[in-house]
Length: 202
Image (cartoon, rainbow, N blue to C red; front, side):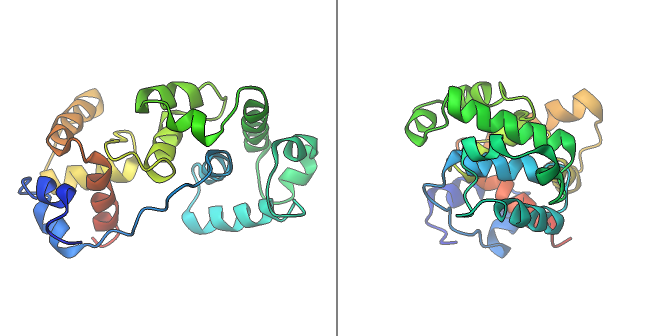
């Protein structure tokens, strides 16, 4: 990543984070991903390894003739069909909730992109099965918002505890990590990407 990039220059002011910036290259952001299919993929991925989630997601898409889980088609599928690809009954219901929400409330890009980060979280978490973490992943990886800090992400927590030597626990840990991340504004999404990739190497 070129040192002249604004986020690189800003984050390099953090002495703990600076070595990560010098040794890790971030992938380019993927522009204009539709929110609805990405939300379904996020629900499927909840509490699963990347490998298992990818397999189940591929099987899920294969249930649809064009590989696209249109909301009305998803709602028409019986639970048995969804379970046959490896989904639990609970996740099948969560996917249906998202499809129903897409039809009745709307997940069109122009609607979502017009919202602030907090508004996106409040809007998406109305869907049963979509919590704050899932909404934050949509903000980071679908909407490409640059300043999101998913403090409840387990890998981010583990990485920050190790990198910064944080010894707090529980609520105190959450507050301390949030405090550390303040210095990364307005590029907390980028900082988290470095932490995720660094944690994979240690």
